[in-house]
Image (cartoon, rainbow, N blue to C red; front, side, top):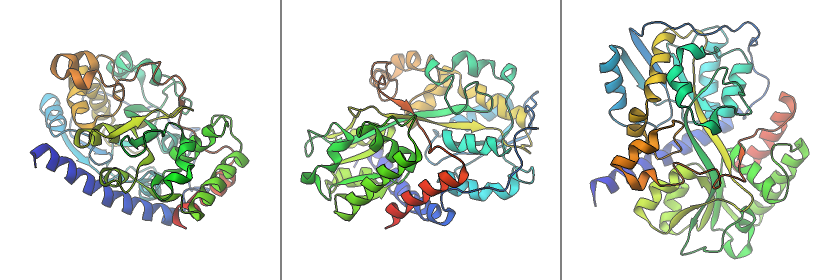
Length: 385
């Protein structure tokens, strides 16, 4: 077994255990509700200056290479503590909410969460606005498709860390005809398909496959799609709802097709050429994990410097070689064309406008907190049985 293959297998085992922990945490959290908070009416802009001292970052596991942090500290004189403690959006929110509601960040100056959670935390008054004048490298190099997302149209409080697509991941030798999300409901694949336990990944794609525009869907549209999923669970069509561990099931052939993430497919294909990401006929969901500066952040100056640092194309290329998701930084492809042309030409990492033409930005259920909770609880009942 090669060193690279060993590393990938270790990654997958770790991700499987994290997915189990995250799913348990999601049940405990209940997936939402009315939260203790202030509001964002009086939230100011995070101040910036010369980066010094300690920088604490909370991010997801396996989401950075082994050199960037040490290179950043060497270049800036800061001392960075990088913690992989965001295993699930809801779990992390439950952990930091008591502190943030008191204006404290637990020592963190950057946290990384997904679009919908970033908006939720900002609306609750937990996230500071960012000073665009302190982030000239970021906004000079941010790719056009991520400059004005629905959840933060002016990039008032968020900077993308990495982006990705949710669509189909298929064993082409076992399910060559799967091209639509509705193909996952074909009885010939009974017990051989999985879907993601992240509601905002799975349900909108099911709605889109049934001709419902996820960006304008009603609460009832969400509930109808969840009812469809419940029926598929009852019939034994859906094997299970998973996190990243669906990749292992695809590799073994226990699963032939799934709703999954583009970056997973890139890494999995390196081990098994028959695993392929496919853009669903109805389009994909595009999401980002975002760097945020929480209220009470002790070192916003270093946070700004780090954001600018990872938006230098050369530094971003180093990260991209490891994570294999969609880079938010212009110029990264050009750097990689010189060092890793195969990576640079992969549309799952640098997608063209044509490739994502039918895709939509990740969406959440509409309505007030009580309506959102109703949808989240209905989905969680399906996931947990």
